[in-house]
Image (cartoon, rainbow, N blue to C red; front, side, top):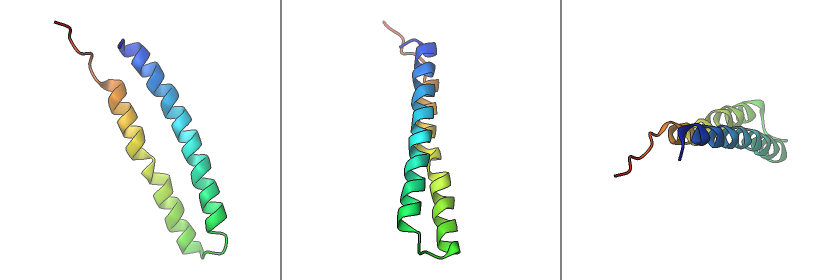
Length: 71
């Protein structure tokens, strides 16, 4: 795959992933933690706010992979 095309696909995937992840994390937090204390909500949103880095890193790693040489 051409590196510029891979980067374009990765960028689109990354933006879509982050938007969907943020919306899902907010809905889950809102629906399940309405009666929870402030520290519990703080811990949930802190973890949810950091965990997206792992799949985003995998997408970025894929975007930066060198092309395979044919031969």
